[in-house]
Length: 237
Image (cartoon, rainbow, N blue to C red):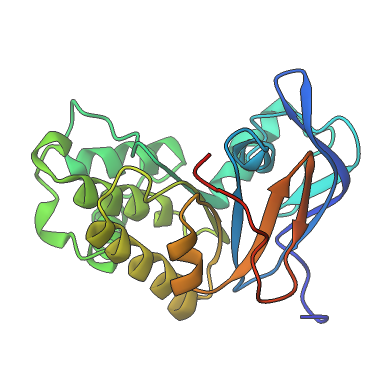
């Protein structure tokens, strides 16, 4: 990895949740092709790291960069361009319920500058095929199961060929079998396309079954676990 530049990096960064510091002195690097888990109890700053990466939370102390943008002092006008280089997947899917799957994806493409209708149609078909949902384009989100909605959310995250997928508890609202399918999809994208993934999870079984780098958030720190034994935390607490 020495010859690669990190997609995401933090150096002695303090991570905020509102005005409160939840993690002090974060040092973290995510490289192309990495699969990185952020784990820890509720309230230890995992989602706050995600929000800092996407420039939703400010970085006021320390250094940080994501997809070529400095996070410390990023200008408001640059934030949409930063986010176009990422795909973001949420626990609650965040699909637009008043329009079809196809129109959900169309909305994102138009919002990010796509204009050619044939290119738009082709890209929508590509990402739906990538997640096994090519036959669901004309369905409304409420007609889909939770697992299918999450697959659509992952398809949405792929639209602009992101350098990294940021996934905040993407299996949190799913039953174990459906969650397993989502993990196979994410790890397959990571393996086959080389897209980096940064994923928040409480589920120990997931990161034990689908190995990756593990960053443990605990007592206002977040450090990489470098041995095989996960710190003894009740992650669901």
